Image (tube, rainbow, N blue to C red; front, side):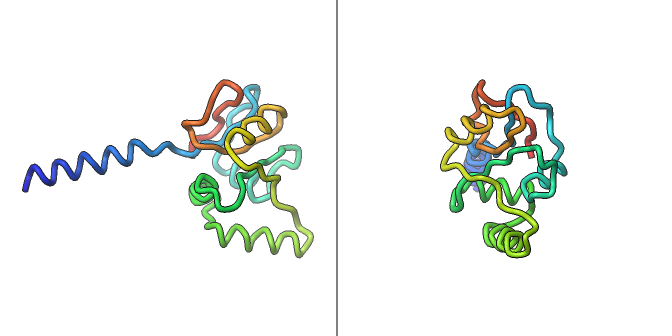
Length: 131
């Protein structure tokens, strides 16, 4: 019984540690970003000079990011942006299809932010927030 519990505990810890975390990225020249500022930016309430990029709907990293940073599920996020657009209060961020496109978009502008899985980070972008 003890052996079974030990194996189970080890398996769970291995699975948890194997999952990379989502991170907010910016241009290598960018400064750090607070969690509060990230939430505002991704909900269209932040500094308007910041170009915000999202992964496409249905992407697991997008879901993980929004749960951690904005506290919204995919359905809540879709409803939020539908209301913002309908009332004329804002438009959703530009979307990119994958991590490579996200890195390219963010690296090309000093005022751009986005998010990717931490395992996809390379020298073209800088991690500015680990939620």
